[in-house]
Image 1 (tube, rainbow, N blue to C red):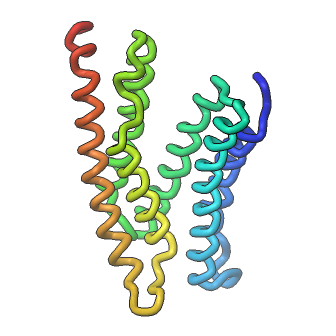
Image 2 (cartoon, rainbow, N blue to C red; image 1 turned 135 degrees about the vertical axis):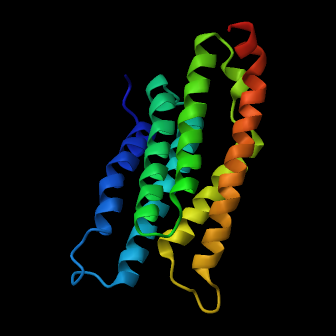
Image 3 (cartoon, rainbow, N blue to C red; image 1 turned 90 degrees about the vertical axis):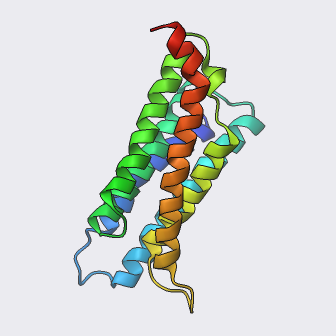
Length: 189
């Protein structure tokens, strides 16, 4: 394996998960609730930016590797799953929403692995709908982590609306990928 900056950023994203989660478990008298939310949002934002940056650098510097292609989506899913679990525990989103999003990620990852194994990975390549789902999901998570109003903007309400929209888009994109894979699934039953 050739170690490079994009892969280092991906590993950094994984290492940020316990930092992100740990912020919510600091002693109550150590950090005001506003600063807990702000700090966790900042860490999650930084991790999200490293996700974009590692992909950009890998393409720009021609440092795309099999290890990076494997680890990058794993890091993304771990970070999102950790955030959703924290949000459920804080009662900022429902367990069903978290299960839909996390379950879809696991199912589509398994589907992509299976399709790659039969030489048809391109049939379930990332689609525009999946990218829109990810953008809405990330914004919703950021808003629900921050949670406090900004002026007259009710961040909590906006985050709740967007997380439900993300769950809907999650189901829609899952149906899209399953439909794309269906001919191969039928042919190999």
